[in-house]
Length: 141
Image (cartoon, rainbow, N blue to C red; front, side, top):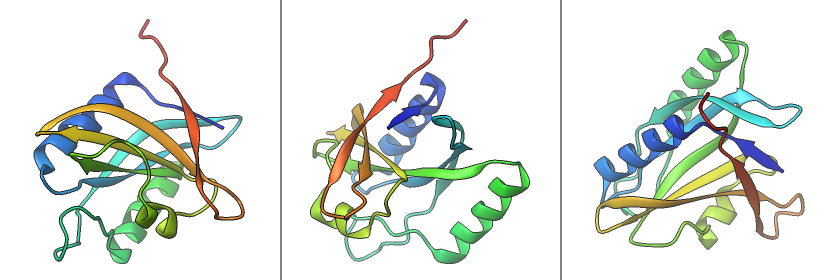
């Protein structure tokens, strides 16, 4: 699969990840699911995890409100993003365990407070592992 996402949205994820450092940031990605996943808006979410700042937890009520806003705009939630403070943008065992198939999982690596690399992943249908997902960043015209 491929996730098409603009450079401006990627920069917003990087800035949110840097502000949250050394904790993880998180959010939802809204857009169009077909013919390929195309991100049109981000919904930053509050990390409700308080016991471990290197994990994130999305509050169910907050996610329901975002889902309602996304659907009212005629879009769908096509994925989620979060940061990995001082770790590469690769899914952890925790990420795999809590992911859902089909959705894009965009991870931003934040090294010493500076976000740099980003990678997107999709959980295999059999839930065995996350597979890399191509990122398509359209050029600005």
